[in-house]
Image (cartoon, rainbow, N blue to C red; front, side, top):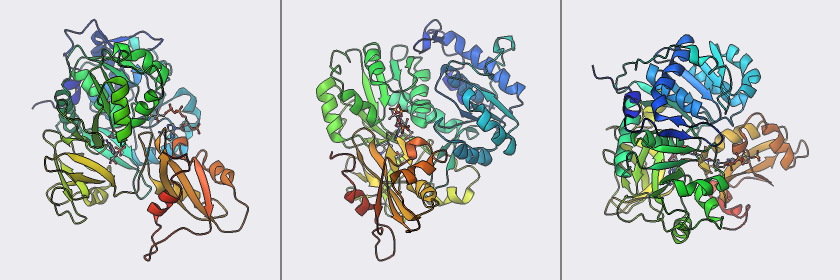
Length: 509
Ligand code: MCA
Ligand code: AMP
């Protein structure tokens, strides 16, 4: 049997030529060398086995970005466990749902969260909880040197699960997208080739979080396949990124990275003289950002489009026009069509919902067979929920969303989840949550609330009860009170009207 374990494609024994080179360069810490990677993931794998993690078990990880967090990911692949990362911004209440849903064998959390998550892990019958801090501190790594590294790479079939990534749903209930070893491997290999990765020469500037597809799979997989050194920053800090740009050749980011770089006078062509490629995705890049960035740096940003459920789907070309406002062409091996609401393909030039199929498309939502089936058409087309248009050459532009979704600084926020919490606040009759233009985050959350008259309510009375229930980035940055919500004749709240009414809440664009 061929072993389809993604670990073999990403690490294996591929680093002979770069053995002495750093894989991850981390400010203030010793770099992690390519030569150390296989043995160290073996050590972490040995720790996971000690905790009885078996192939197919979920390992839920809610930690700060660190080289050790990458080792944990790779160790999970190695032993065939299913890596299930969570945003550290999630509250205990939110984590509770994910734990109950995925039933992990092991929860790895930040040392500071251990106390608040311990009782919860007991209640959710999670057998083990370990801690990992941003400096590699915490009991997960304790005494690792004394363990015999587990150097086996467990055999996996192509469609065995490698990871579950939670994405919020229109119903307000998160769904775990099941990604297989082949989903991830095929997408990584396509990107590595399509973006002309310069093996052993590219240096990646990595400032994205590593609990989402963009930072974890797109960025790190390309770097591993290309045996590239990575400047691994704990978060996006404009100053640190500017300091590092002269040493790097590739950067991947959400549009906020680019607008923040543009607001710094140090962004010049000289600063980017070693750079080869700037990539943007996860949210729409404004055409004006694309143009300004080209003027200031000399580089046309390459915009691509993807989803948690399918990794990367389309990309602007490496050679040829990277057109502002478009997301380019379907990647090799990926089929894309524009369809009406019944799944009938539309002629080129008409707006419809983007549907896709290919080796990148996920296996379904964890323990939600009906929900999974509902998102696919006959013939295996996955319904993205994004409105798009395809021109005569096959070039795609995303023109809006069929799904009620806000994308703020690259994070997805589903209004329903926020509305459901706001509606439980005493004094609230009903609420509607929309995304409105925001210069830094692209979109920001605004809540429009109708009072029931039973008590006095101000902005604080709405925001305060959300603490501890919703991650900070989901909480409304503005709250407005109205007598009634605009509805159509069917009684449906007119969100487009609300978005228009409050479009200048964060200043005009
Ligand atoms: C932080 N805050 C936010 C966001 N981030 N509010 C709204 N939207 C956000 N994205 C809030 C915090 O809660 C905090 O609020 C305040 O802003 C400052 O927080 P801080 O952590 O200092 O913010 P930051 O470091 O400046 O982060 C902003 C950021 C970050 C750099 C844009 O959010 C980021 O790295 N985003 C990338 C997300 C990403 O990787 N998405 C890819 C998804 P308070 O002060 O009230 O506490 S994968 C995907 O979408 C698909 C597959 C694809 O195509 O890639
Ligand atoms: P997520 O569920 O976090 O994986 O986010 C996927 C969604 O992000 C897609 O369905 C799109 O709505 C959006 N998205 C990703 N890349 C782009 C892009 N380049 N332009 C517009 N929207 C994008």
